[in-house]
Image (cartoon, rainbow, N blue to C red; front, top):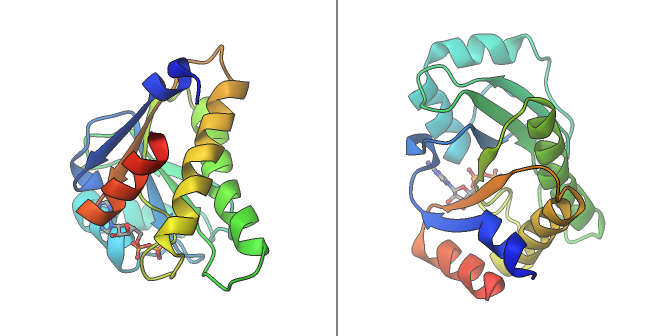
Length: 172
Ligand code: ADP
């Protein structure tokens, strides 16, 4: 990975709802009406106004992304994307990469310059961490490379030490 791209990416361990950047990404489900894991944590922290706005969005297809305000969070925006439920077919990787790419594209249209991603699909959706991590990192690095004129900082927010280790290993 070119040093310039590497400098635009940061790996941290922690709770994504506590971050102070322009935008965080939610690993949502197709209903966009809340769920467990990071989705539940984001809705709890952002407050009921988030659910009210999500109701107006009428769901989201797998691999696509929609945006809301951040409400009680420090971030201005939340991008909700729906990762694939791991099935072991080649479609999984395509849809997971779409989540990262479509989130970044949407962020750019909202003039977002810093964005934090959780490890999409690697929780309840069952995507093996070792397979998901290179897709996350490579897709983000490719997007940054092809948008070199746009100032974007990307944070991979890992909830646990194992996830952080996987991202750090991939970044090296
Ligand atoms: P999915 O349904 O896409 O698998 P999950 O929320 O179950 O989504 O898990 C995705 C990742 O988010 C997992 O690595 C999980 O540990 C992590 N996660 C859960 N809560 C948080 C949080 N508050 N901040 C950051 N990551 C979180």
